[in-house]
Image 1 (cartoon, rainbow, N blue to C red):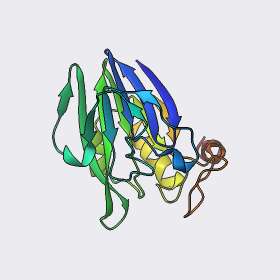
Image 2 (cartoon, rainbow, N blue to C red):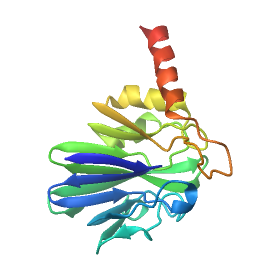
Image 3 (cartoon, helix red, strand yellow):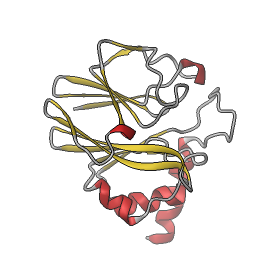
Length: 194
C-alpha cells in the first residue's frame, strides 16, 4: 500500500491494484491540479471547491460519497468502505462523513471536514484504525486540543496531517494553521503529560 499526500484533504492511495483519490479539490484553492488517475474517488461531502471537485481526476472512476453509505459497507474487490457521519459545525450544520477504507489488513480513517469534538460513541463507530488522515489546521475544522484527545483515544499507529495552512491557500474564512502548529502543540502536550 502506498499513501501519497496530494494537497488539502486529498490523498492518492494505491492498494490491491486500485488507485483511490480522497476529497479532490479545485485548483482554484491554491494547490496544483490533482491531475492523477483513479479507479475510485471518495468524497466526505459535497463541496466542489475544497472536497469534491472531479474535474482534474483522470480515468473512468467510481465515486464513493460517504454521506450516501453511512451505516453500510461498500466493497470494491478486496477494499471496503464505511462512513461515519459527522458535521462541519454543531449542531447539525454541514453534514460530513469520515471514511474508513480497509485494504491489505490496514484500516485508514479519512476524517473529512469534521469541525467539532468527537464523542466516545463516534470513536467506537470508527473501530480500530491503523492510519489516521487528520485535519490539523484548526478552525474551521476540529481544534487541535479536540483532535489530540480523539487521537489519544483512537490510538492509531500512524497520523498523517491534512487540511492545514500553506502559503497562497485561497481560504476566505479563517486562515488554517500550518503543520508546525500541530508539532508545537503535541510537543507541549507531551511535556505536560510526560
